[in-house]
Length: 275
Image (cartoon, rainbow, N blue to C red; front, top):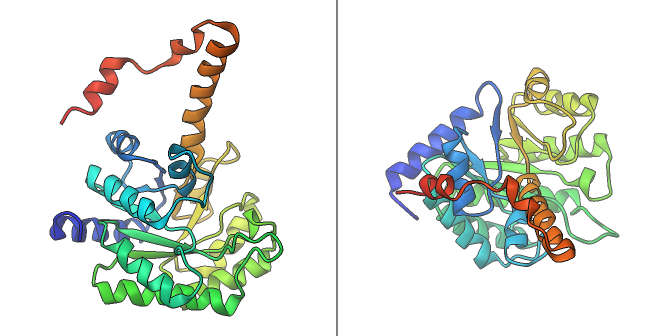
């Protein structure tokens, strides 16, 4: 296992405790530097982002190889002292035994949490058959249990971002994933208050993660619905890329440097990364 085993155990314990009560924000860094800055801002835990990582490597989301993803998990978990949840996409495999093998590799990187989604990446059939999807979650659960790490498992159903925005089916899947061993449930793309509340109630007392990638709600509003965890996916990465592109386009198209006025001071960043 990467790092000191005692530290990893403490992180897993802390991560599980965060899911027992209240509501917390788990922002998504894409590299060691962004992770360290978020830790310094006081967030209690972090989650990796497959899209943020992919863009930093010049790839599209879901096109990052497994080994690169594992390296990113090690880098981020090794850069901070707080728990890190892994966006492990679909487990980088289809068959349950292969998902289990890859999950075993992931939990050895120092992470405190791991998510497995049910998206196939195929537009015609965007979600795995429910029976297979459940076996994939169960396989990840068995791999985590066999590792003895206690890593928290999140089961994700992707219908609302994969072209199948069906609330009853989403709830059916999340409930099945909970029964298969998922500790936390997550359906990215939910935005309506009634939909979020319905999911929270359906899987209770298991905690629910809600994705917020735009300004449509607040932490207080989601907490009032019973949401336990709030992540932002690739939104922080998109925000950073937005500032980068705005300044670069001004430079390329107008030959001016106004975009640099909003840049963080050199000394502030250098000081933030002082060891």
